[in-house]
Length: 275
Image 1: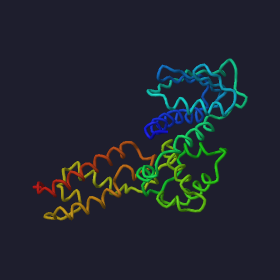
Image 2: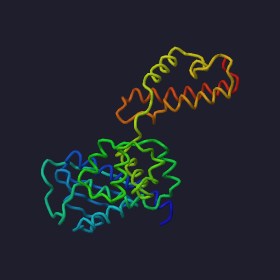
Image 3: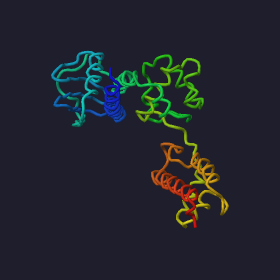
Image 4: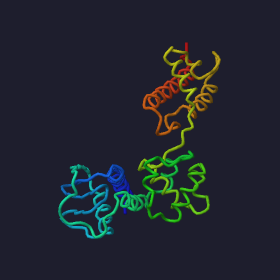
């Protein structure tokens, strides 16, 4: 499969699987319509369980057939998803093996991340220590996990940084891909390691129009080299990615604004425009 096709499938799978997980968590009933490239798929749900599926008028009878249909439609360009909710179970035929929607999201994403190169995984995971979000806890509950996936969950709960995960017993590259898959689905995120007291202090300084040197905690007259070192140190604690999913939106926004102000302050000092 060409790399561009892999990326397109990955984007489509991420969209579809996030929706499946959401329907599972909300115990939704109704019909999910998926369209793209002039093609159409229909999925029927009852209390978060997928009970029927058809793609391009091809009816799926088994769970395996449903998975194959999902992977196929993930390659469509311009995917549009629309849910028509109903309090009652949809009428008509059903699958031989009705399944919680999350149990289909998991293997679909496994297949979608298989051909993504390791360099991309490393760049996007970084060296953060990750944890399972509430979405992740719900996703893996009762799921048929592979051995390396169970190992990843063990090390995640130990707080092992992502960069060390592939070398941990039982994980390997497949486990590393599993972590990235969880991140794409919002099922895993970096642990909150940002400094709230520092964030609040910098927000006060920013509002009071503190000087570039003050923002970077430098004495007046410090030069560009000191500014670069100070910037790296502060961003380690203040970048939005350092704060977890439960952070109030206002504080995450403030983190972004402060990080931008610190970068600008470093540039001003480096250029000698800090008067």
